[in-house]
Image (cartoon, rainbow, N blue to C red; front, side, top):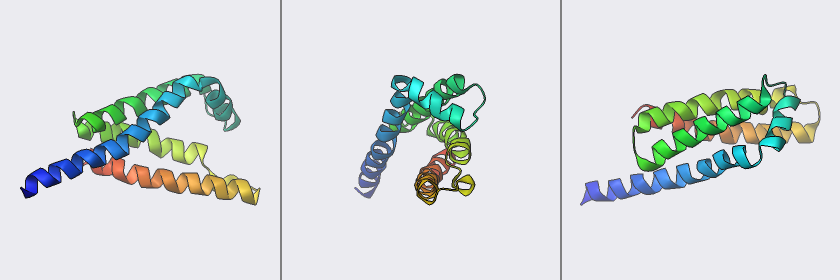
Length: 124
């Protein structure tokens, strides 16, 4: 009985974690113009390719975790997504405006939480 409960909790956790990430991935494709402009402002090389490629990595990693199919590979893909994105796109330490610095710090810290879970999935 206990194993069944743990399996159910693990499935719920995967759903709660992966579904929002899938929506984020979808946003990379539906909002490619806006995200490309944001990436350009952060001096990301080949910004449109970076947006599309990172969206694909995010989608594949999320689907892997959601479906419990090669979850460790999905976790690795999510680490590949969140580590550079966090450093490049949410560089709060480079922001002079206190409001922008705070917003970027919050986004960076949220990404670190998501990254921590991704590392956990990668270790499975």
